[in-house]
Image (cartoon, rainbow, N blue to C red; front, side, top):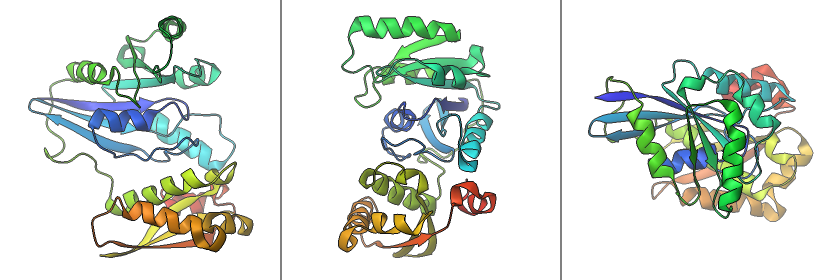
Length: 279
C-alpha cells in the first residue's frame, strides 16, 4: 500500500478548488470566481486498490490587507509541512506574474509539481510560452491542464500517485472528504451568496451553522455592516431565498434550511471573531 498527502497551493482564483473536485470526481470544495473563496484547509480523499492520496485544498496565498487575510496565508503555508507532493497551480490564461513568485517562495522544489491551469482555449504557442516562463521556479515537473474541462487531469493524478511513498490507508474506502456536515452546509450557503453579490461584499460574508436538529438546519450569514445586510437579503428576500433553494437542491431530501442574516461588525479584523468562525 502507498499513501500520502498532496497540498494544492497558488494565488487566489487560479482554480485550485475546481482542480480538487475534478481530481476526485465529486464536489468537496466550493467554487466561485471571487478571491478568498476557500478559507480553510479542505481535504479530499482519492482511494484506489493499492494507493490512497489525501489532497489538501488551501486558501489562495496573497498579500493580506486584513487579519483574515493573514490567517488565510498562514493556513496555506502551514499545509505545506510534511507533504509528500505539492501542486503549485498557476493561471495559464492570465499568465505568470509576481503573485505566483510570491507563492513560490519556500516551496520544496524537489516535491513540487507546477500545474498550468486554464489552458482550454489557449493556443499551443501560448501554452509553451507560459511553461517556458514557469521554468524559473525550478520545480520537478510541469503539467498543462484544464480543471474545468478535465484536460490533462487524469495524467496529473496518475503521476501524483506514483510519487507517494509506502504507507497506511488513512481513510475508509468510501470516504471522499473529512469536512464535517455542518461546515459543508455553511460553505454551500456562502458559495451561493458569492455567486449573487458583487464588488467588495464577498469578502465581508461569513457563514456558520448554529443549529442542527435534522431535518432542521439553521445557518447564520454574517456581514460586517448594516448596509450590507439588505444586499445579502435582496429585494423582498429574493437573494437569500434563491441561495437557500439552490443549497437545498444539494442536500438530502427533506432538509429544512433556515437562513438568518446578522451583522458582526468588522469581523475580518477581529481575532476573536475569526476564532469563533474557525478561520
